[in-house]
Length: 81
Image (tube, rainbow, N blue to C red; front, top):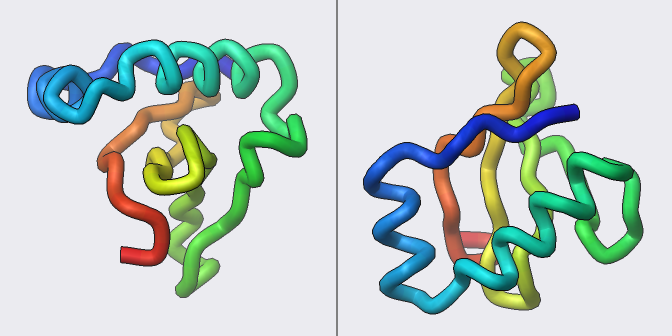
């Protein structure tokens, strides 16, 4: 599944927090195999909203939704924030 380009604010966030390399690695893993164990993809509560997350590193996760067969990252947060 393809991940859409990040919006301006999320791009600035990953640059500010020096996550570019880690995000790009996670993005590549996700697009090749979204069930890759290091991504730890999970559906968030409440499950009926169909909001998911994948791990960027031990501290940060990308929150995403699926729209028309494309993944859109809507936020990057610290884990369990």
